[in-house]
Image (cartoon, rainbow, N blue to C red):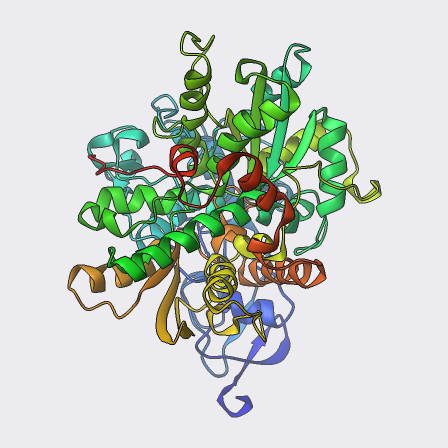
Length: 590
């Protein structure tokens, strides 16, 4: 590798850099940070903002360092007076048409434009604004778009096209009328958008954000007539600390539980409980399909962005989906039936809040297919009518929303003691923990399916072949004397590869896991913004670390799940399980 490096000069210092990198990356390697707004590693560069310019000896004009590669002998100045003036002017021009609502903006503490304006000491508006914008698009359940805050960096467009393969948004218009819009300028809810939220994670400003529902949750907590319970997704324990200023990958499980109690939730439960429940249902479904000739390959159904994608782009393959609801929705059904009955509550006086790494979970919670608990209650009391629109999960908040709630309450999570989840819906296993990273659902399922069939413990329960961030991972496991071929994909553009194989009749797999977001839930659209690969890896490793620490690491050994079947559900794939824990999906027209 050393032989491939070239020598250049950066601010008077001779350094050796990789010639395949751009100048931004080369300077970072040399310890010099160049400010950027449109640049994002791993996607096509729009090179539109002009903030990353540098001075290159011999060049007629300043060079945009996000697209220029170094050449041997290049001499670069990154902070000359000429460079600083140009960067400052570029930011001033962006701010001319930017609203001045920084104090109330949802991205006020993570806005890259605001940060760079401070670094460049932009203190006044030198240029008059000239653009007019439509009202914010609030049609989507999960995402809000505000054109007035868009700086046309192109990150959202590139991620939607290249990482997700959805193409829901694109540039339209020319010159001063250029903007990012959907096809025919429809609202996101009427577009191809799958609400994965990857656009909101990479947006440098508040132009694309999650739809904040924290005020509604605070109001419910303050209502003495209501019992408000909360569930936390596996990935949250590895990312909430980061959103609150701790290092990436900080594992804050116990402190998170303590913080949620201090916010006023009546019970703090764990979505990992229903992750284990999902494995019992999904594993049983896979075995039934394998033994009875059902549709194969069977594909997991935990990721709502992925569900939206297959409904919109591959509706002919819907029979391949597992009929299992996601752990979030299974939890809502169980909480408002089994737990409500045990606690002497009725669903009218309960509210279920979920903390999710995902913006698409907001949409999933509002799907008409997700009201299984109310059907059960109607059977108990046929004359009962809900006092309000009924949902198994009332609100799904993102990691970012919970972080803002904790900050608002003045809670310092780093100083809180570790506390335990409440019983019975707070008991979980290591298998439930690893649901939060790509390959985790598959690994959890294999741990259980193998032992259910073989009737003996696995020698090594860690399936390392399906771990990691490769685009598509594959493995073969012998179960019951027969090979079961499995595949794992994360990011919807990668999912297309596996789906096209199925559509062409060329898929060699029996079981496929698909997560809509890069890295799985640890890279979800509701997670802390601008997570690079290193941060996602740190989050993922934190989940594997917690898995290894737990006494029980297989879903079928969760005593609380066993009790749920004995006391209420009966058995996996039984009548009540189908009523509460399974659903169906249909083609989505846009």
